[in-house]
Each structure stands twice: as C-alpha cells, then as structure tokens.
Image 1 (cartoon, rainbow, N blue to C red):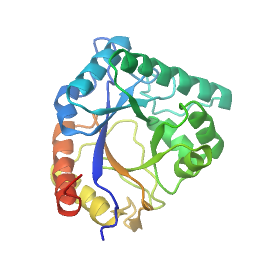
Image 2: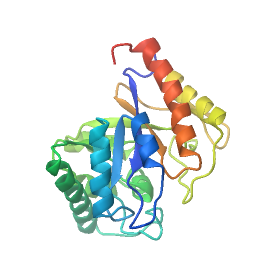
Image 3: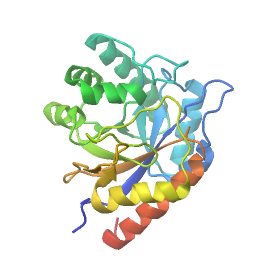
Length: 255
C-alpha cells in the first residue's frame, strides 16, 4: 500500500500580479493543475486580475481556492507583520469574501482556503495565529496546510476539512516545516522530479540539513504545491505533473 492513501493533486498560487505588473505564467500553468489558490488583494492581485483568473480556472474546470495573505504588497506577503487575532480574522474574512464575490458571479464554488507566504508559516508556529486565521474561513470550507502542525490540529478543533500539502519547489527543515524564501530560487526539472518522487512515493523528504524526514501525511487527501513566481515555473509544474501522474496511474487509476 502506498504511503499516500489517495490520488495526489497539484495546486499553484495564481493571480499574483498587480495592475500592469504580471507575476507568473498563469495561462500556461492553469491547464497543468488541479487546484488554484487565487490571491485576494492583500499581498498581490487586484479586482480585474481576480476576475480574469476565476474565468480562466472556470474554463479549465480547476477547483478554486482563496489565497489570503498579510497586507504587504511590496513584500509580497513574505515579511512578518504582527497583527491582533481580531485583525487577522477580519483580514482573512475580507479577502475570502472578495474572491467569493467573483466566484459567485460565475457560479464557481469556493473549494478551499490556503493562506499565503509568511502567514502560512506563522500559523504552523503559533496556535493562536492559526485559530485567528481559520476563524475568518467560512464554516465547513476545506483548508490546505502542513500535516502534523497547528494547521491540522486547529482545523480538526474547528471542524474544517483538511487537505495535507506537499511542496514541489520548496525545501524542508528537519522538523518537516518549510524553508520560506522571500524570493524563489531556481530548480532544475530533474531536481524537482527527485524532490517530488520522494514525497509522493514514500512520504519522505531530504531536509536542507541532510536528514531524511518522514512527512506525517496520515490518511489525508494530498495536494502538491508549486509556485507561479518560481523561476522556470512551467517546467517545474510539468516535471511535478509527470511524477504525480505516474504515481496516480500506478496506484489510483480511477482517480
């Protein structure tokens, strides 16, 4: 029996431009993925970009989630900002509500919520931050996060369905948390294939310090994340897609 108990999906953060500024090759990435995390205006994205990204995802039948972040466009949501629990809850509710307006207009359901960047890391380190963020998520909505951290624990406490994430283009610490870089580094497609293969086949990963780390996926549904702002994002996602499809076809043909 494989270490991962379900077919693996792929998610990518999208809509992370602003005004005339384009962040990633979204149009090329959307046909390659299963789940989209759409920026909601605080770390990136604007109303027109959100609208256009929802339309593109609808065209390709991609499940759409909200990607709320800290209010830091200049830092792309990758700089820590101290906010009260009330502020965090309101910020998340505001962003998810904004995206949901565009989704409702196109009869597209909100599939999930996945916090962005350093907020994601703050949540797995601080239970109160995690609670505050999840309090802004609509009741019963699936959340994406790191298994074995407060992401999973608080989701269970608050009755939110949980999908465990793996990462195709992010390195791991020895405690199975993520190395969050403000600016993404380049990967060779062969490196991606090796990195992804270890995770999907064995639920393990080699940490930046050299240790082989077991990822506590359990029986959760799994979605592998890649980033649209990574150098060579299309090649990265194609490499990840190849490995994921091989795993799924071998183990979960009907998925």
